[in-house]
Figure 1 (spheres, rainbow, N blue to C red):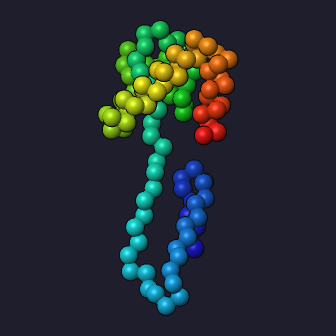
Figure 2: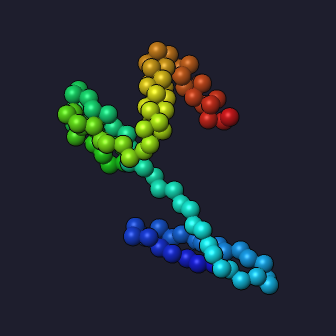
Figure 3: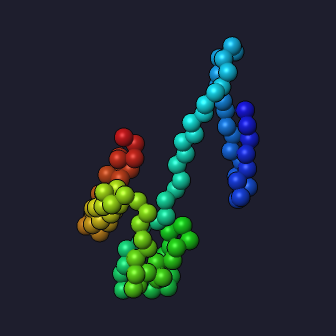
Length: 105
């Protein structure tokens, strides 16, 4: 077992499992990093509109925050966000119920 601490002080525990009579020759490590938020350009953003992960919307009135995701993943996320926003505007109570149901599935 191995413990490591990142720059923010978050402690991560790594567990290596091998059979008693075996020697570990190779280890493959996979990890996921939270991507930067997707913020599209909108000239109507004003200070106080909000932020995602510390990125203030009002900083993106003339430019968008470039996406680091694959274009197909980016497109799927934006399409889903637009559908959710439209549903919320059309029927707020119905949207809340369907959103809660979706989260339990």
